Image 1 (cartoon, rainbow, N blue to C red):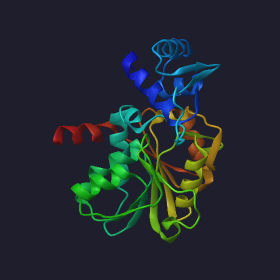
Image 2: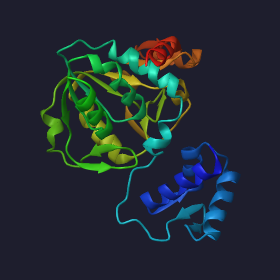
Image 3: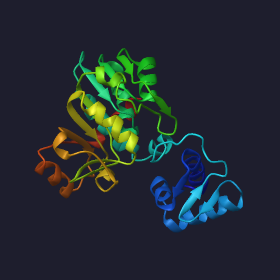
Image 4: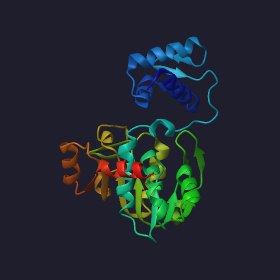
Length: 267
């Protein structure tokens, strides 16, 4: 990631929450601690943020606290070909007429392209997924209610009596921050709360993660591996990660990159 792009991500992050740590910014940008500290020092000198011990804060603290994690616009550019292949494999599991849930995320967003020729009942908490499918498909779309978090392009509600409780789906498709022996991991409590509600409304849980996610860790566990029915990933998955899923009796689907390349050539 170039310096200008890192600065954009850093400035976006400090506007999104009261204080952002160096470690969090390293995760968002895939840069080293030394690089992030230099970036913070530069932006501090330019009076675009305020350097604090262990991180940075906005000169004008945000009125509204956002979610932890990288913005959608940054995640969208990472491992794009793998995400396209994974998404195509996910849509192949769907049958026209079914009800499905698609949780917001950059990997699940790639499902919109192969879904263009399908007819399903789609419930989603992702504004860009809903918008794309409304414009480019004949699927029936239902959006969850709540607050739109602009950086992640996701709609979340902290209330138990939201529309989620009235939804039923054959399958739920979702991404995750990380996948480990302890289970599916996320980085924000509000995400965990909302996603646990959605998981409870589907018969099958299908997790879409590129192979880099098996190395990621987070302080929050969304659900144990035993709750996951299927994991779809790319050809970069390690033998150790595959064995972990097999031991938990989770079905593993490895999406060949050729599927994504064929889709790109056809477009």
